[in-house]
Image (cartoon, rainbow, N blue to C red):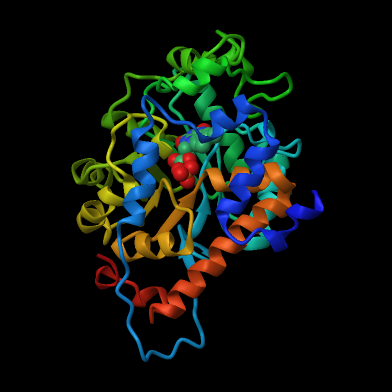
Length: 363
Ligand SMILES: Cc1cc2nc3c(=O)[nH]c(=O)nc-3n(C[C@H](O)[C@H](O)[C@H](O)COP(=O)(O)O)c2cc1C
């Protein structure tokens, strides 16, 4: 890590983003930052946070802000988790092992992508943080069941099924750059036989074409019963954007929901997740924890999400920015900055306890 990129210069998540851009190859940067279509949703995720304002209360004793909470049965140090993102080794040789170390240091959950580039066993050995495993529904159900078995053996605490990707969307930046996975960056936890039809990364946009061959686009609500029968781990659905689907999810016995548009990487023009959160939290927030992701970059964003009804936020790209710049030190820098910003926002808004944070705080 260069001197100028010591944590002292890193005052906000934007500083880590700029430093990551300066050091990553253009096509890798575009893969990380980019979205689908015209990237309308990528931009809207940010503006939807910025246009909301906070209504602070005053003359409250804020000497002991308390950010700790319990997520799916585990105590964590803040209502913040690391979103699942494929292939951390794209930006740092230690990949998910470094991210897991940082998650442990910060006491926050790490949602490991199905397409992690380090083995679940190595990731689990590096951390005491709660690990959740994200899944796409592969056509090869035996491969899916096998992976779930290995996740249970590795001590994974919950499964997060991503339901907004019957196939990977067209991402113009990757097509233009001809983005491919470099040699040595592979999906370390997926049975190679299940991936063998076309190795990802052999031609431009191959992540997209690969998804058409491997992802099962036939699955419907009724198929969730199979997953329920396959594991006793809590099951969270990621990629819900309507109250109607949130209701269906709860009726089908899920244990949590992530309100998400996949960081603007799936359906372009999809509603910003923070705009969808209120209705969904009103529909199911008393039954299951409702998480949200997409565009969380500041402590005040986290506060806004909590006020609208989130139990916690997931943070995506900023984690990879920190990892690219300084490995586990960088991820720790990003997460601890976000946590410190949330703490300050709670103090300055007169809401020192998470239970003080409600709809009256945001407009
Ligand atoms: C490089 C990259 C890879 C991703 N890979 C996955 C993945 O494997 N599975 C998944 O469910 N979501 C994936 N996502 C979406 C994130 O989990 C999350 O929804 C999104 O990044 C949140 O938005 P943010 O980056 O603005 O915080 C990925 C996102 C990025 C940027």
